[in-house]
Image (cartoon, rainbow, N blue to C red):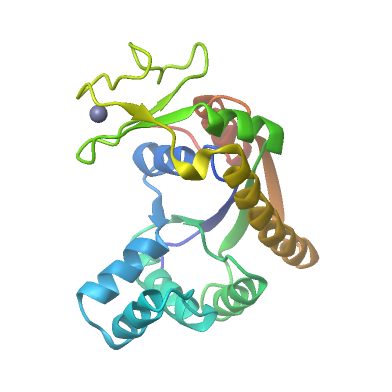
Length: 230
Ligand SMILES: [Zn+2]
């Protein structure tokens, strides 16, 4: 018997707080979150046929094909549907092709499940600024993330030094303004394609202001979808 009622597809650029919002939904509401990365790793570790194929593709520096990703995800969904009423998809679907496969699969197997797009919106300028102020501990065993934004609760006590291990705080290459702009361009091209697809198919898109604190976004999420914390 399937327990599944809701699928929330999370959209939001890197640095929008999407990961933290998903984490709150998992911790406080008992949702389960799909991670394609950990599914890939599991298949690789267990050396399944599909795992061997993914391993080869990744080693060749290529992207795992849409059909392979969709196969793994739909298998996972069928199992997760027995145990969870709400599922978060983050990082899947990534292309229109994947979105089409997912819709097809859901209409065949879970036609009563409600799909909703949760979109975190924030301007590119704000994100460049936010990520530009993100630093990380250079100590390999630590890698704690800090924010240099004034009044942030993740600010290091001493500028440039990790609170935990006294390691040096550095900026990730990915977070430098030029790199962020490139990542955002890639993100927007995928997002537009997917939003168009879901718009045409009558799927609800709920927008949230990602400039808000993530706790506030979570409260709005509860309110918008009628969830409450027991
Ligand atoms: Zn550290």
